[in-house]
Length: 214
Image (tube, rainbow, N blue to C red):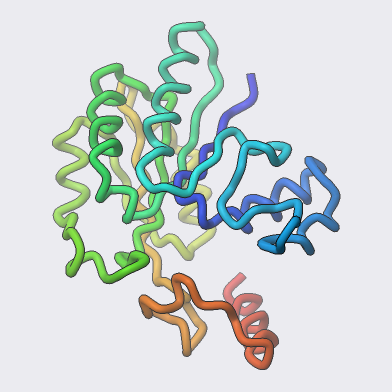
């Protein structure tokens, strides 16, 4: 009866790995092998890693799988919920919108999406790739219950999850407005930081900036 979690933005696997290690799914020492040749933890999240439900990386796969899991739970009379963390880039994919319609049609109120809405993708800003605004209105028109939050405010994130499902008979969409690379001066709001490694001489500065945000 445990809840399920799908990371649709598979390139964010490092954050999930840290949680899984803390929860005892695998040794903490595995974290030191992240993204290394022959390491235990791949750059894009993989179902071969203990605790990971589904491999992702190619965008647009997470929500269809999450919607299928949510429907399967409903059909089996199960009470667990399904959560899916997406990127705004996921929403450039037609499969995402098929899943959005599917989830609404089947009244999957056991499904919650949270989207990292920083409006920057791998190769450009949203307004230069595919503009989604008015995003909330689109989702409401597709029969989803939507709430907008500050994606850097832990209290708002917790409160949003505690509210789910927002409406009986509707899937929930939490639109978390975020800033890419927030608080790190050479990374904030830049397209290039999507792929950039942090230089060794900047590492202490970045850690201090992130700790100040927590």
